[in-house]
Image (cartoon, rainbow, N blue to C red; front, side, top):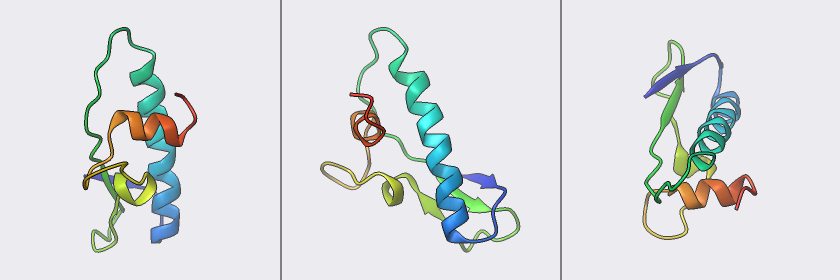
Length: 78
């Protein structure tokens, strides 16, 4: 669970999207990486009742969890 600087769900989703893009760019730049699940949750500082998950930003191609392949595709890196 990450706490981010945001005041609402939309702002939290924007911040999490930026974090996911940074994470996946670092991941795909590594040699010989395998597909893995990406499960990150974020909420605004001071309000954990608002939560945004990876799957709210990147729709999983199958199942409930997005994979590194799903995230790379979302950001057009594959």
